Image 1 (cartoon, helix red, strand yellow):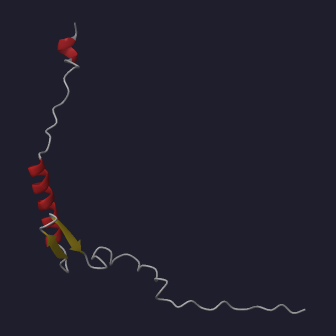
Image 2: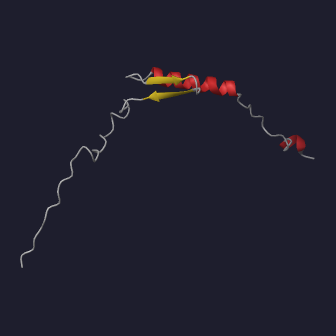
Image 3: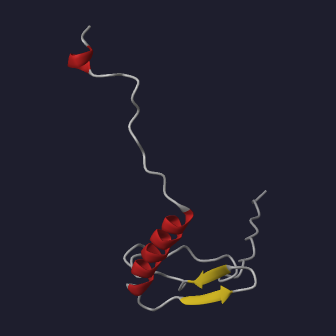
Length: 89
């Protein structure tokens, strides 16, 4: 009766499904935009036999340089021998 006021409830909104080609092109564009802005540039290795690639990023990214330095690695600091304490009797 009040269908004209509230509209039909059975209609679901149409969601455009992204094709594989659109997904790959979008991801490629996003990666290109990110990598183009990096300084120093990342090393990109392509493996055509596998159809994959890797991105070797620098140890510290420019936006991470503003943060506190990372804690020292255990191998950087030699272990100090434990001190022996003797109690007076």
